[in-house]
Amino acid sequence: MEPKDMICIACPLGCRLSIYEDNSAEGFIVSGNKCLRGIDYAVKEMTNPTRVLTTTVKISKAFFSRIPVRTNGAIPKSLIYEAMKLINCIEIQAPVRMGQVLIKNILDTGVDIIASRSMYEREMLDHIKDSTFEVKKSL
Ligand code: SF4
Image 1: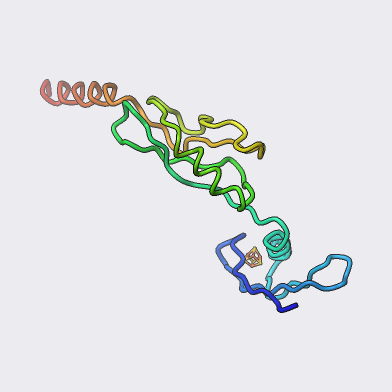
Image 2: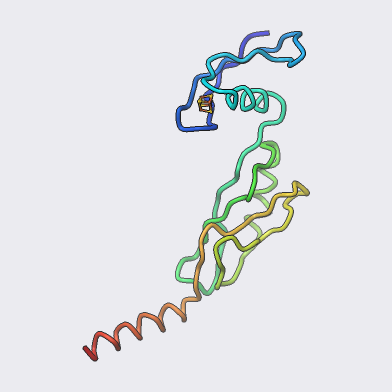
């Protein structure tokens, strides 16, 4: 079998890895890695590639119309499309705090979709802005 080349994304060094199947107990031979994490990464890419999904979700009553969200763990790459379809169907309402679970156990992966940042209600921000203005006026 032809070796497969890939870049290791387990750390910023980005080693160029080469992996091919063989008859050893491990089942694969990996080269180009500067540490053992590179071997784990390459074998996982060949057997069950996973990714942390980052995207945005519609939010109402907030200053912005979308809020950044992410999975709180890696999910199989093959489920990313289905997960995105689900995520695109929801609309949440401010206020939201960072880390809040928005979709629990997405697609039975054991992984949740969580808010990547907090977002206040628009009225609350207007109130804060008005109070700041009042304080400035009284100085
Ligand atoms: S093989 Fe090790 S050193 Fe190289 S990119 Fe992967 S984690 Fe970093």
